[in-house]
Amino acid sequence: MLTALLGLCTAITYGAADFFAAIASRKVRVVVVTALASLTGLIVLLALTPVLGAKFSDEAFFWGLMGGFSSVVALLALYASLALGPISIVSPLGALLSAIVPAVIGVALLGESFSFVGWIAIVMALIAVVLVGFIPGEHVELPKPRAIILAIIAGTGIGLAVTALARSPHDSGIAPIIVMRTTASVLLGAIVLFGMWRGQKASAAENKEPLDRKIWLTVAGAGGLDAMANIFFTLASRTGSLTVTGVLTALYPLGTIILARIVLKEHVAGIQKIGIALTLGASLLLALA
Image (cartoon, rainbow, N blue to C red):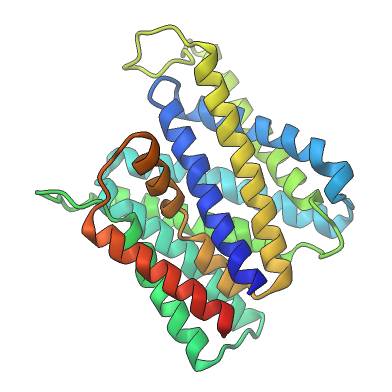
C-alpha cells in the first residue's frame, strides 16, 4: 500500500515539475531552465538534510553519480526528441521505456517476483503510461528515426537514473539524491556557461519580452518539485520493489495533464481519461497485490 501511494505521488510530482518547466521554457532556453531547476532542487535538498538525514558513503556517492550522469543524458535527449516530435508519439515512447528499464532490472537482476494480480496491475500501468502520455491530433505524423532514437535514449536514461537511486544504501538518507543533483547542476551549468561564452542568451529564441521575477519563480518551482519527486521515489523504492515503483513513476505525464487542466483549462482527451482510470485501477491492484 505505502509503495503504491509513494510511487503515485512520485509520478504526480514529477509531472508537476515538468509542467512548470514547460511553462518557463516558453520564455527561457530549455537548457537554462533545466540547469537552474537542478540547482534550485539541490538547495531544497540541502535545506531538508537536517530533517531527512544524509550519509555520504562510497556506495551512496557512486549511485548518486551514476544517477546524475544518466539524468543529464536523459533530459538532453528528452527535450531534443520532443523538439523533433511528434510529441504524441515520442513522449509516451520515452515514458514507456523509463518504466520497462527498472522492471527488467528488478525482475532479471534483483529477483523480484509478483502474484498474478501484481502482474495484471503492472500490465495495466504500462498501458496507462502510453494512453496518459498520448496527445491525439487530427493528423499524427510518424516520427523521424532520429526522434525515435532520442526518445529511446531518454527513456532508458530516466530508467537508469531512478534505478541508481533505488540501488543506493537504505541508510544513506537523501545523500544519493544530493550527489545526483550536484552532478546534474555542474554538468548542465557548464553547458549553459559554454553557451553564454558563445553569445547565447538566456531567453528562448521566440521570446522578445524581458525575463521577470515570475519566470524565475516558475523555474524554482520546477526544481523544488523535481527534488521532492526524487525524495518520494527513493522512499518508495526502499519500501517496496523497484519494478512497481519504476512503473508507477513512469506515469509522470499524469501530473502535467492535471495541472494543465486546472491552470490552463486544457482539454483532456478521452483516451487520456481512459489512461487515468487505468492508472487508478493499477495503483489499487498494486496496493493489494
